[in-house]
Image 1: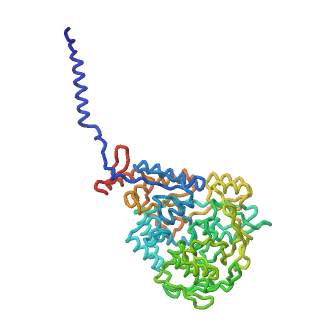
Image 2: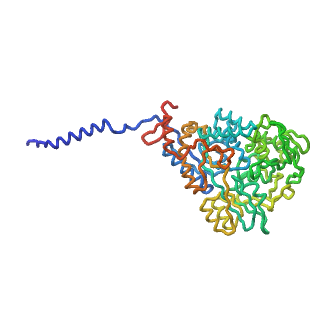
Image 3: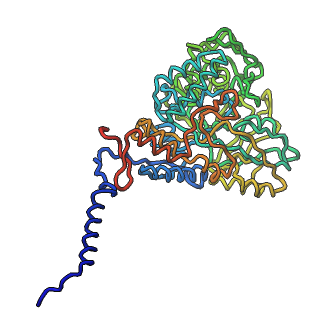
Length: 554
């Protein structure tokens, strides 16, 4: 049987198809996916986030940040964790890769020593130190040392501006957002509260000015989570410090205008750049009735130095010795000038009774001092400890022998497991002051309650991402810059804070106008810029979009 002859048009179609196939294989198609060596693969990131119950802001923001990091090719897991665990493992032991923390705007932080120096100087990078990231930069250290040593205010401001610029470029611990502090209180039964910049109604001064309108004279104070530790030499937790500063008197307190004023000290005088003389008030008594003496003050500072107390260490590092001149006069001698010494060192360290702590220190040593639960805590402050039932309530009562007794008779601190619990407590008239900042929807709810008033104030502090530069990939500046540019700060403000915050780019808040540098680089909100940083640094991606270090990287 003869083969059927193929038609010319069919043969032409086959030829054209073959030619097109061959051309397609030679040009116009992407190259085959790269087979990149596994040893160059960028390590996965474990981002610790708080539980949703504890702080929905950090929980939701953490999830949003992780999603953007994944878009850059990073492998990211998000691990919800109780704050107490995160604080111990991250803030104290530095075992983290990345986690977010909310830094409160306490009065002593108006001078930006804490945010600039303590959080970033290499001397604070050891375990327990505030340099949580392990940021080591000799140039930064040199400028930061000058920042704390010079006594000229304008020179300090110029240095603060330069240091803010360096941190915005290096991104060791980038700030994310500064919220508007929004608190509510029971205005039916209490009056004359004080909203302090950064702290709102949690401020020391609120508890000194708030006054009862009627028969009920104990304020019920609602807060998310209980206190953890009432040892002033050990704790670094804000909730603990809020209570301890009511129990223990410092020599100086920063007033509502941000100025240090004598408190337990009757006066203080700078005799020279490294010597400050302090005169004690004559009417100081501990809660157990013993008189406060210059020896108690000297013992407190000596003990803080010997035990390397974490909350105080950065502020007393320059303290060489405390000399007792007479029963009510002391001299603080510094090894070198330290500009924030009065507001920070004299303003943060609470006077401890020597007759209680010295036997423990002499008998069992520094470790025993740091690990004691210190119950009951005895100070000389305007409130004294009554009792503490963990996870239920803690009560302080007015110390009537104090030189400046509060208007209220006491504070009953009630912990809640969830932020929304504080809101419900306020609505149900279970608490009189809410110490947790409110979101807009919560504000609208509380405004409907006739017995409540909502107050606002700008924040000195901020939410900050803590990278760990001791581990990969955070030791690489390009990685940190890319990760930081990928943080959707504006979206977090709009979605998570519902507009009640501002994106943060500097470690000094805009409300702190004298110290704030408005002209720093503003990393964030730009995935394309983040990708460009990685490309320009030689990073590559495999066929699945995973990120690899540049060629030649070990």
